[in-house]
Image (cartoon, rainbow, N blue to C red; front, side, top):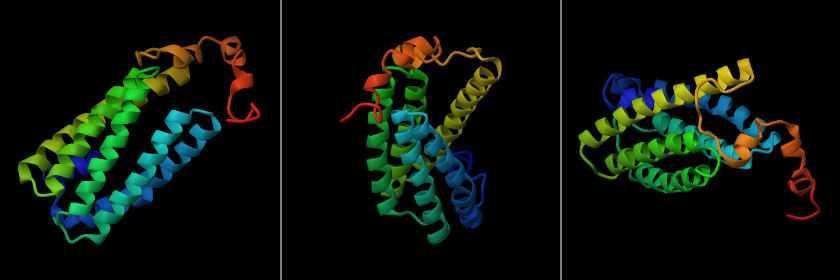
Length: 192
Protein backbone atom coordinates (compact mmCIF):
# COMPACT_ATOMS: atom_id res chain seq x y z
CA UNK A 1 0.00 0.00 0.00
CA UNK A 2 2.92 2.30 0.65
CA UNK A 3 4.03 1.84 -2.96
CA UNK A 4 0.54 2.41 -4.39
CA UNK A 5 -0.01 5.42 -2.14
CA UNK A 6 3.30 7.08 -2.96
CA UNK A 7 2.86 6.28 -6.64
CA UNK A 8 -0.57 7.95 -6.63
CA UNK A 9 0.75 11.17 -5.10
CA UNK A 10 3.74 11.24 -7.45
CA UNK A 11 6.61 10.25 -5.15
CA UNK A 12 7.23 7.15 -7.24
CA UNK A 13 7.80 8.24 -10.85
CA UNK A 14 5.31 7.00 -13.44
CA UNK A 15 8.20 5.38 -15.32
CA UNK A 16 8.64 2.97 -12.36
CA UNK A 17 5.08 1.60 -12.57
CA UNK A 18 6.26 -1.83 -13.70
CA UNK A 19 8.68 -1.98 -10.74
CA UNK A 20 5.75 -1.32 -8.39
CA UNK A 21 3.81 -4.12 -10.06
CA UNK A 22 6.73 -6.53 -9.80
CA UNK A 23 7.12 -5.84 -6.07
CA UNK A 24 3.40 -6.44 -5.50
CA UNK A 25 3.53 -9.73 -7.42
CA UNK A 26 6.88 -11.02 -6.16
CA UNK A 27 6.88 -9.81 -2.55
CA UNK A 28 3.43 -8.85 -1.24
CA UNK A 29 1.38 -11.59 -2.93
CA UNK A 30 3.44 -14.60 -1.73
CA UNK A 31 3.74 -13.36 1.86
CA UNK A 32 0.04 -12.67 2.13
CA UNK A 33 -0.70 -16.07 0.56
CA UNK A 34 1.28 -17.75 3.35
CA UNK A 35 -0.59 -15.67 5.95
CA UNK A 36 -3.89 -16.74 4.35
CA UNK A 37 -3.03 -20.42 4.62
CA UNK A 38 -1.94 -20.01 8.24
CA UNK A 39 -5.18 -18.17 9.07
CA UNK A 40 -7.27 -20.97 7.55
CA UNK A 41 -5.27 -23.57 9.49
CA UNK A 42 -5.84 -21.51 12.65
CA UNK A 43 -9.60 -21.65 11.92
CA UNK A 44 -9.91 -17.87 11.68
CA UNK A 45 -12.44 -17.96 8.88
CA UNK A 46 -13.09 -14.21 8.65
CA UNK A 47 -9.39 -13.35 8.86
CA UNK A 48 -8.45 -16.01 6.32
CA UNK A 49 -11.18 -14.91 3.91
CA UNK A 50 -10.08 -11.30 4.21
CA UNK A 51 -6.42 -12.17 3.73
CA UNK A 52 -7.26 -14.44 0.78
CA UNK A 53 -9.17 -11.70 -0.98
CA UNK A 54 -6.37 -9.20 -0.43
CA UNK A 55 -3.80 -11.80 -1.53
CA UNK A 56 -5.34 -12.13 -4.96
CA UNK A 57 -6.00 -8.41 -5.08
CA UNK A 58 -2.26 -7.70 -4.77
CA UNK A 59 -1.62 -10.15 -7.59
CA UNK A 60 -4.30 -8.56 -9.80
CA UNK A 61 -3.20 -5.00 -9.09
CA UNK A 62 0.47 -5.88 -9.54
CA UNK A 63 -0.25 -7.62 -12.82
CA UNK A 64 -2.21 -4.56 -13.96
CA UNK A 65 0.72 -2.30 -13.10
CA UNK A 66 3.05 -4.53 -15.11
CA UNK A 67 0.77 -4.94 -18.14
CA UNK A 68 -0.50 -1.35 -18.49
CA UNK A 69 1.32 1.51 -20.16
CA UNK A 70 2.82 3.89 -17.57
CA UNK A 71 0.21 6.26 -16.16
CA UNK A 72 -2.73 4.70 -18.02
CA UNK A 73 -6.18 4.61 -16.44
CA UNK A 74 -8.32 1.50 -16.59
CA UNK A 75 -12.09 1.42 -16.35
CA UNK A 76 -11.86 -2.33 -15.69
CA UNK A 77 -9.54 -1.68 -12.73
CA UNK A 78 -11.88 1.02 -11.45
CA UNK A 79 -14.89 -1.28 -11.58
CA UNK A 80 -12.84 -4.01 -9.91
CA UNK A 81 -11.92 -1.59 -7.11
CA UNK A 82 -15.58 -0.63 -6.61
CA UNK A 83 -16.61 -4.29 -6.39
CA UNK A 84 -13.74 -5.19 -4.10
CA UNK A 85 -14.48 -2.15 -1.91
CA UNK A 86 -18.03 -3.42 -1.48
CA UNK A 87 -16.79 -6.82 -0.30
CA UNK A 88 -14.21 -5.24 2.01
CA UNK A 89 -16.88 -2.96 3.50
CA UNK A 90 -19.01 -6.03 4.28
CA UNK A 91 -15.98 -7.69 5.91
CA UNK A 92 -15.41 -4.50 7.93
CA UNK A 93 -18.99 -4.59 9.20
CA UNK A 94 -18.63 -8.27 10.17
CA UNK A 95 -15.34 -7.54 11.96
CA UNK A 96 -17.03 -5.09 14.31
CA UNK A 97 -18.46 -8.06 16.22
CA UNK A 98 -15.08 -9.18 17.51
CA UNK A 99 -12.23 -7.19 16.01
CA UNK A 100 -13.08 -3.47 15.78
CA UNK A 101 -9.49 -2.50 14.98
CA UNK A 102 -9.69 -4.54 11.81
CA UNK A 103 -12.98 -2.82 10.99
CA UNK A 104 -11.13 0.51 11.04
CA UNK A 105 -8.33 -0.92 8.91
CA UNK A 106 -10.79 -2.37 6.39
CA UNK A 107 -12.88 0.83 6.43
CA UNK A 108 -9.87 2.97 5.52
CA UNK A 109 -8.96 0.41 2.85
CA UNK A 110 -12.49 0.67 1.44
CA UNK A 111 -12.22 4.45 1.24
CA UNK A 112 -8.90 4.20 -0.60
CA UNK A 113 -10.33 1.72 -3.11
CA UNK A 114 -13.38 3.88 -3.82
CA UNK A 115 -11.22 6.97 -4.36
CA UNK A 116 -8.74 5.10 -6.57
CA UNK A 117 -11.61 3.45 -8.45
CA UNK A 118 -13.24 6.81 -9.13
CA UNK A 119 -9.96 8.11 -10.53
CA UNK A 120 -9.60 5.01 -12.74
CA UNK A 121 -13.07 5.35 -14.28
CA UNK A 122 -12.54 8.99 -15.23
CA UNK A 123 -12.03 11.16 -12.17
CA UNK A 124 -9.45 13.94 -12.20
CA UNK A 125 -5.90 13.44 -10.95
CA UNK A 126 -6.81 14.99 -7.59
CA UNK A 127 -8.80 11.84 -6.74
CA UNK A 128 -5.67 9.75 -7.29
CA UNK A 129 -3.72 12.09 -5.00
CA UNK A 130 -6.40 11.82 -2.29
CA UNK A 131 -6.45 8.02 -2.67
CA UNK A 132 -2.66 8.05 -2.31
CA UNK A 133 -2.87 10.09 0.89
CA UNK A 134 -5.47 7.71 2.29
CA UNK A 135 -3.21 4.81 1.26
CA UNK A 136 -0.32 6.27 3.23
CA UNK A 137 -2.67 6.74 6.20
CA UNK A 138 -3.70 3.11 5.79
CA UNK A 139 -0.03 2.14 6.04
CA UNK A 140 0.20 3.95 9.38
CA UNK A 141 -2.89 2.14 10.71
CA UNK A 142 -1.53 -1.21 9.47
CA UNK A 143 1.88 -0.54 11.07
CA UNK A 144 0.16 0.15 14.38
CA UNK A 145 -1.78 -3.11 14.11
CA UNK A 146 1.28 -5.10 13.12
CA UNK A 147 3.26 -3.62 16.00
CA UNK A 148 0.44 -4.33 18.45
CA UNK A 149 0.17 -7.95 17.30
CA UNK A 150 3.94 -8.51 17.36
CA UNK A 151 4.25 -7.05 20.87
CA UNK A 152 1.29 -9.12 22.01
CA UNK A 153 2.92 -12.26 20.65
CA UNK A 154 6.28 -11.44 22.24
CA UNK A 155 4.87 -10.49 25.66
CA UNK A 156 1.91 -12.89 25.69
CA UNK A 157 -0.44 -10.05 26.63
CA UNK A 158 -1.99 -7.01 25.01
CA UNK A 159 0.28 -3.95 25.20
CA UNK A 160 -1.29 -1.75 22.51
CA UNK A 161 -5.09 -1.95 22.40
CA UNK A 162 -6.78 -3.75 19.50
CA UNK A 163 -10.21 -3.56 21.17
CA UNK A 164 -11.15 -7.23 20.71
CA UNK A 165 -14.62 -8.33 21.81
CA UNK A 166 -16.57 -11.56 22.12
CA UNK A 167 -14.93 -14.73 20.82
CA UNK A 168 -11.86 -12.78 19.64
CA UNK A 169 -11.33 -11.58 23.21
CA UNK A 170 -12.10 -15.02 24.67
CA UNK A 171 -9.26 -16.49 22.64
CA UNK A 172 -6.95 -14.68 25.05
CA UNK A 173 -8.80 -15.80 28.18
CA UNK A 174 -7.42 -19.35 28.15
CA UNK A 175 -8.23 -22.72 26.63
CA UNK A 176 -11.36 -23.50 28.65
CA UNK A 177 -13.53 -20.95 26.84
CA UNK A 178 -12.32 -22.22 23.47
CA UNK A 179 -12.67 -25.91 24.31
CA UNK A 180 -16.29 -25.42 25.41
CA UNK A 181 -17.33 -24.70 21.82
CA UNK A 182 -14.93 -27.10 20.09
CA UNK A 183 -17.53 -29.73 19.21
CA UNK A 184 -19.49 -27.21 17.10
CA UNK A 185 -16.47 -26.05 15.10
CA UNK A 186 -16.19 -26.71 11.34
CA UNK A 187 -14.14 -29.83 10.73
CA UNK A 188 -15.25 -31.30 14.06
CA UNK A 189 -19.04 -31.31 13.64
CA UNK A 190 -20.63 -33.75 11.20
CA UNK A 191 -22.25 -31.18 8.88
CA UNK A 192 -21.99 -27.46 8.16
